[in-house]
Length: 185
Image 1: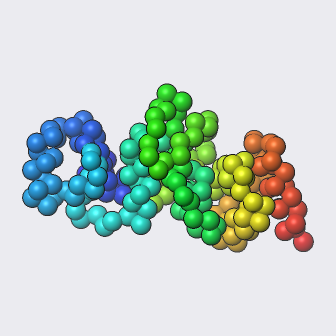
Image 2 (image 1 turned 90 degrees about the horizontal axis):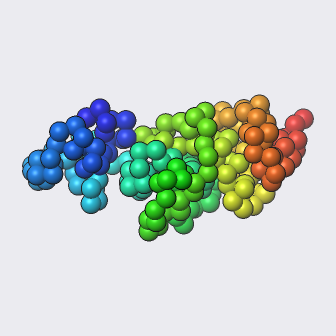
């Protein structure tokens, strides 16, 4: 329960095995309605509602416990753009690289302060998400929309965005600085 609770009610068969549930017991409990088998090797506790980001939760569990929802997928969780991601974007460690259908894996380095928990997901912060989508080629208009909405809704601050621009440099810094300057009175 403690593992699943921190993951919006979801858990993997490997996580269940680590705490003493063998595959037969998992199978039996799923058949008795205690767990819902969501996908091969992924379950949800029955008293947890389906997550509105179930696809991201499944992708995150499939790619490993260190994976982090990022890029356009994180932007969708924050509801900061009208961009509809065509793939699930996940940042994984370099050693975790493996192909997954429908998942765009990134091996960017993340600092601990660039990861938060939201909707039961490990996800990049708003500032990191915005810089990642800028670097990956989001249009200037979408970047402006994302930054404007994030600031208006109190999801970030100008100083946090400036700090991220300083960290990432290049195109991300250019867009962030330019957009923030446009918004200054």
